[in-house]
Length: 55
Image 1 (cartoon, rainbow, N blue to C red):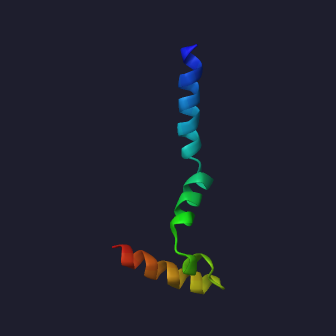
Image 2: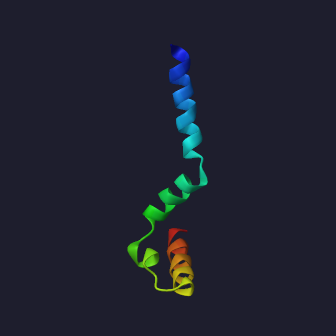
């Protein structure tokens, strides 16, 4: 039945668009020093520095 394969493919595409899946992909790409920041302010500072280096 061809409809099941198409439904499954569409389902997988919808699943990729969920916010939590997209955030997890980006979070896993961050360096350890950013992720393991002891405070929110330190996290923001390190994240800004990391993002500036990408440009």
